[in-house]
Image (cartoon, rainbow, N blue to C red; front, top):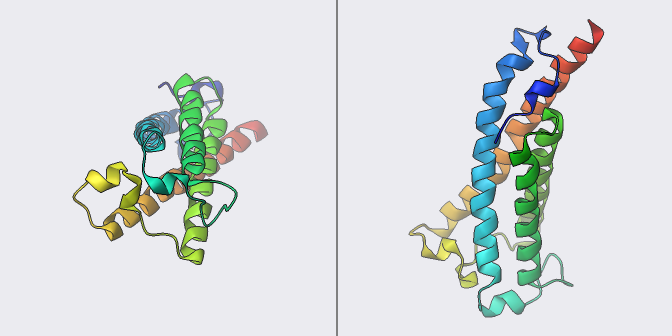
Length: 171
C-alpha cells in the first residue's frame, strides 16, 4: 500500500505539521487498517459460507434481511474498501474518509444493536470468535475497539490533513 499524500502540497506547515511529516503516520495507519479489514472481511465471507441455522434467520435490526445477507454486505463493504486503501492513488482525505465512513457505519450498527439488546457476540454463527478462547465480553470489547480504531484516528488524521491543505491554499 502506498500513501497518497504525495498528491498534496508539502511545503505548508500547521503547528509544525506538514504533509511530509504526516506521510509515515498515515501510511502506517492505512496499512494497519488494510490488514485489519482484509482479515475481518475474509472472516465474514467464511461465516457467510457456513451452515449455521441462524444465518437463515431474520436479523432483529433489519427484519427484511437474514444474518447471512448482512454478513455478506459487511464483508463486501470491508473488501471493497481495500481497493482505495491499496491503490494509493486517491487523495489522502478520500482514503481517510473511506476509513471513517466504515468506522461510522460499524459504530452506528453496534450502537443500535446495544439499544435493541442484540449486542452480544453469537458463537452460534460458527465464526472465528467461536474458535478463539475468549469470553463473549472480550470479543464484544474487541469489536467496539475495531470500530473506534477505524473511526477516531481517521477523523483526527482527516482533520489534520484538511487543516494543512487549507493553510497551504491560503499561502
